[in-house]
Image 1: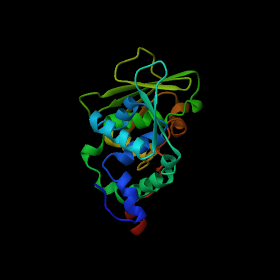
Image 2: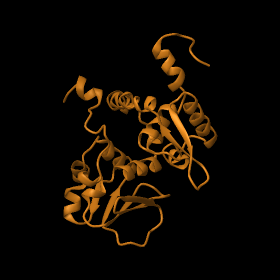
Image 3: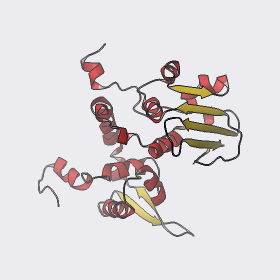
Image 4: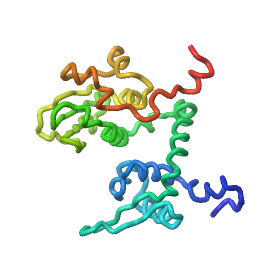
Length: 231
């Protein structure tokens, strides 16, 4: 049920205001097109609700649904109307970095989402050679504490089982620290100096880690407290 107002903000919220909708648009604008890819980025969203939201976005003209040629299933592509939301999402992210980070709870540190973001942040062009194997050891976790990333040419695969390849670099870290590093709340250098992160591997890879495992796009935006009450 809509807001029943002619205000353009109200009409926009009729389309965008339901739970999960903007995060689904985030996934679409990250060039993900398939249902299982959306599920990875929105793991707490039920498949039924995901199907409903995709149908709603299609009806509103934000998504085009196409059959996958020669396969079962569909792909979903953002329309121009959807792409115009990118700067709006960027501003929401900037606002969140400034004003909402203090509301983070332990439940917000989602391991699977972190690994998805890290996978997306790998820059294969900045790694040496055709294949690089990265292992993450989360020392504070009892389940799924070990993860591997295999970067081969331009492909990045993530798994929780040893792929049987020699590891090039190890990340020994706790979940919160790795999230904080990726978010830019703490630098790699500081996390290492404080003993929160240990990198084991070639010095060249360690010294250039930010070039091939890039922080998120909002890294460097200080929280509001740092602006209002600078140290």
